Length: 359
Image (cartoon, rainbow, N blue to C red; front, side, top):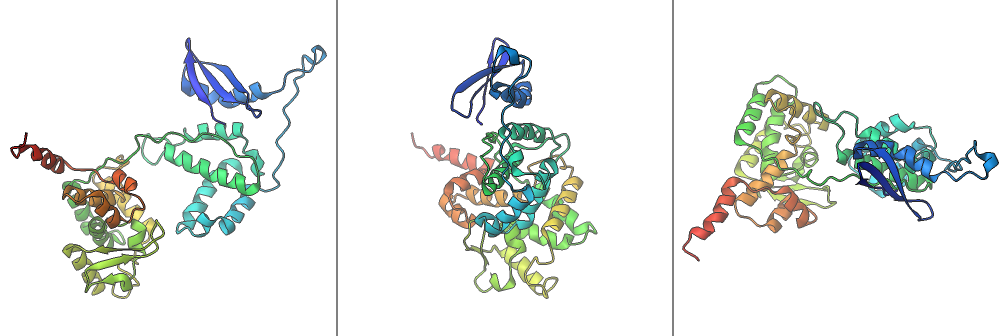
């Protein structure tokens, strides 16, 4: 259900349409939009309750009919989806999908009928999610995370044959990453990885540099096999990437030297350069390193920042968005534009165009 909130004479109102398409405008009697959103489920339920049948029934309101059960639990719908839904069947992060489902049913109950997720109930859940702790100190769940959960619930409702929840996704405008990686931060992170005694730290040290120089995704590097590292050509082949294709990325002299060193040393017996690292190990090491650098609360200082920084440095050197798109393996140049953030030097170089005697 799409709900529009608007303020009139100090009170926030709800503007929505009922099942028949009739438009309804109802006052929330709240003085803030946040309070109106919190009270919305109860207000909508009351507004959609049929009127009293007669004066004799004045003390007993007719209850709205309970939604028909879909006959499928959340668990059953999810397991069916994992077998039949193409995006889940072919996903490289099936473990992550299960983790998301597990977090969802902590609220709904995995043995509950999926029909439990009515529009009003989902609106209450969305409000509850927004109050839950986020990944960093003093933060709450991000809009992107809430939207992801709403999307998964939509899929489960569709699999179970239930009506869609129709609850609107939250705006994520302004959430684009703007973070550039400073040389001092990169140097400090590398130094910490060299000196700490954590398992996998030395491999992580190599991974950080290769990730920056190839602008590759974490998963692409962790799955990279030695057979796809072409030392004679100075390139690596990333197979079956996020955009369901493969791409060849040239190696810088430094990245090639690091991979050759691992081939002849620490990773000689492994299937790939970074096969001794797992996603969870990388996440843990990055989190500890970020804390050591005093950046524990910097929500944009994540491993993926290396990809952003690598692509931005290519842009700083004057290469156009289409070249960067192919280097990154993006399906669209629009995605590339979101990643690339020009540095101050590149912007100054652009301004210097007007210092060449032209009018």
